[in-house]
Length: 71
Image (cartoon, rainbow, N blue to C red; front, side, top):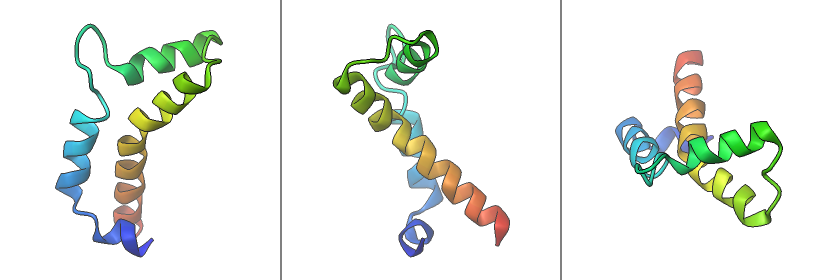
């Protein structure tokens, strides 16, 4: 948790908006992978890895915001 406390909030926001949503056209990978997850077609290991990779900035940002709110 100490590492999460040391991460600047603005860096996590920037990472979520750029890495988390890349590529922007035709649709963000995260949105595409979430749709695949909802439809049950997220089966390939590369797709699961891609989902985790693009979701990681949002997960870290959410954890940081939650930790800040609980302090």
